[in-house]
Length: 214
Image (cartoon, rainbow, N blue to C red; front, side, top):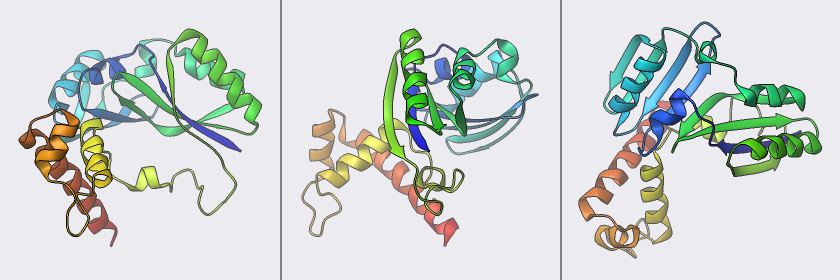
């Protein structure tokens, strides 16, 4: 089996809601409604967009994260050519769908590499596509669809992920430290307090996730 994670600039309510924000939306479709996890500093703005598009039946909010059950399924708002293309090339969509940076991020699984290539070619002919990851699935233990590193780790916003990765790359977590928060903020082109806020939020999410799993 072969797998790819693709970011597709496909117009839609949830993708549009994340454009220009650091917020992410994860979606599990249940045909008659959607289960959504919305996370990020601008989650309230994104939730308002979702509420206008499909309605919100129930919600749980905690900090900058919200869990929503929608009034209706997004599929009811129109046909999705991406799902049709998946079926045409005998590919599978592994849930959840993820929306971030104005894109629809799809984890696609195919039995044959040629099918995955054909799916990418047809989608890229219609929409701008970014390939985030690509690999061959060869191990049962490591490649269970619902037990991957991506699903086990918390969902960081693009800015939180950038802050954390840059801090690691520049040696912020070395002993002794190779960089200060001011130096890393300058590298990223943001204010020190802004960088520190993104870093603290990323660290908090990671630590809470690990603590719950211990």
